[in-house]
Image (cartoon, rainbow, N blue to C red; front, top):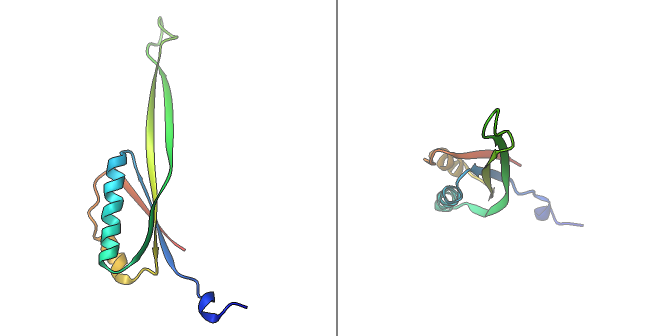
Length: 110
């Protein structure tokens, strides 16, 4: 039978970061982790998730050169950061962060 202290579930905050540029997402995740550690928080990550690749094929010409096509791709890089036992100071420091444009941060509690 587990002890009472082992049954207490640790509260965590999960940050899911998405960006088109790999260098931008790495610098942003480093900035987030430094802000959390300055407030005395415990961090797990950043965990790299699989890169989502969206490919598009477009006709170069509409009429004569119909078989000539051009291909484009968009890469979406993703990272996952878990914050264990987040306090009010940590949440405030996350909202005050000035992240560059093109970086999307999704926050979930769990």
